[in-house]
Length: 142
Image 1 (cartoon, rainbow, N blue to C red):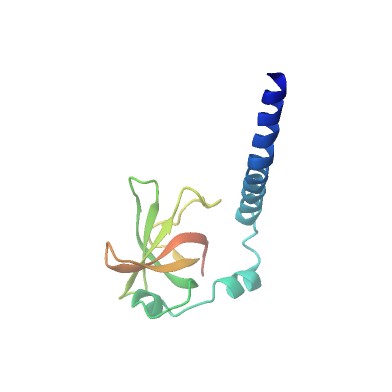
Image 2: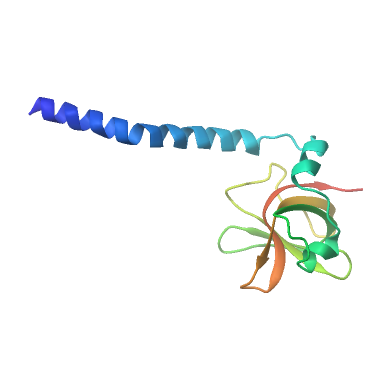
């Protein structure tokens, strides 16, 4: 009976061990990514290229990542925990969503702030708008 238990335990370890270890590695690497300092503008610009605001708002930016500059028109916390940031260039609107899984160290921007914000560019077909979701970072622009 004890040999059977040891055999089953070893089988479970060898079957689940790599999954557990890869999950641990992934969580550690995500934590390191989240801690990437925002003072690396060259790296951010490489991964999230600056894009004209209208190109994102009109859905004409076809790459998956972007950074845009605009003024915060409104900020709302949604029932799913996301922070919706309505960003405008004075005419067009892009919704940017900070998700609980990627919290920002500095929190969320305030209404009236002029910001550079970067993240994953996508179309929200449910709401009928283009957005940055999730937001990976943001900073005040002077």
